Length: 561
Image 1: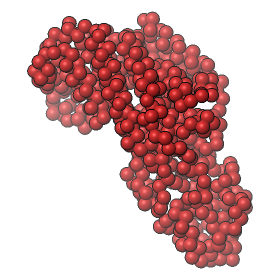
Image 2 (image 1 turned 90 degrees about the vertical axis):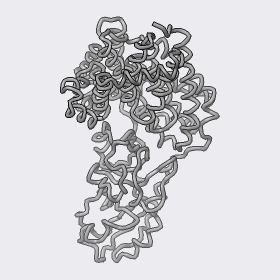
Image 3 (image 1 turned 135 degrees about the vertical axis):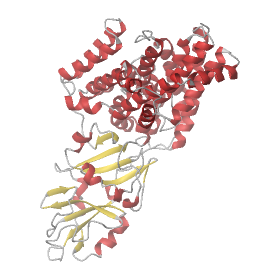
Image 4 (image 1 turned 180 degrees about the horizontal axis):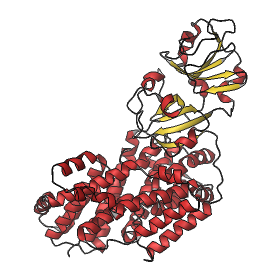
């Protein structure tokens, strides 16, 4: 997107002012402010407060889905859905074990509920905000109010909830998902350093333990202390207990090394004993992670993150064999051994979609209620017209920081630079489509193909955007389609409002693939899903939501101007 922006500016298609205008668009600034508001709710424990009060003890799978749907739809209607889903995943995983319902039956409904909730208000989704901002720019109007889309978004969300309640128990996989990392002994092994052996006094590197083919050295236990994420220059001492991760069949290779002895104290298995010097963490790899596409041996994970990979799970199963040769992919679940400050340092990193410290209890935050009051203030002032959506979101972000619901650092890290830059560049491409006449030509072709039939144009708009969203990001797809749709409706003398709403809903309603929407990818690993699971559950959902949306727009909005 930024490359396209640069080409349009350098070639003179757009002036510098036009090329960079997206960075000052009110929709983009509102999205940035909403990231901070969401960070305040998330960091203060506001989401945990609501979830713990509402989940309860369901009597069936359908009841469990309903209990997830209600709070998530409300939360996602007024804040970014990514922190909502990230906060709820660990809680729902534990809840699923408690109520004896497989996590695979609950994770996809969690993601879909967040997506549906984003359609309820103008601030529920970044797509709604940026489309509204571009609509104001292209038409010169005041745009839409906070609850303008609620008339269609609420019925769509409720219909989607009913669809999940009825069909999810049938469409989602029935396999029982156990914790693939439950038995540490399945993928780690321990040996000891002979007190009289040749390795005593040598560094890890010099001892030949750094670049073994099938295993990685994870930690050293020495005189009751743990040396985690071991440095290659660490000097070995007699009776050191070495913990390796990887192919457990490589134990015979290790024991061939002179100075290495088998570890016989099985009753005190190292990784099963809690130590303050280390923490075990599960993470879900993001598409933005620098390590994706690399074999673990080449990813420099210890240098990048101060952690070592113990095991990898993909499609709900642990990837066995040579750990070093596994190529990391987006959506992989990793079990890491890390230093104690890893979670704090990486909590807001874009490299990981989810970070869950094993056996850690979420802290109780004193500002949880205050964060909800700030969000309520923001919503009420925007809904009543006291402030514009932009000013209400800026005020909410400011209050979250000032009242210390989130720190300056947390607010800064909450800003998704990839999303912000993509949106800003997409504004420029939309402007170029209008300025060069491309939007006008495409509009004429659409009118010609549809014969000028309003309802057919509406269907074509929704279907085209729904398909485009699966190929590029939902925000970019919406911003590229908006100028074309505005040209089309103007030439055909049609009411623009239902077509703009169709763009907002279609861009968000991405259910059929794990890569179609970020929350889908977040639940992919924890739910133990396969790609086909999303196709089976999401494709009918895509079609159903499309039919509901188009039907409501045709029945309750005049399509002709």
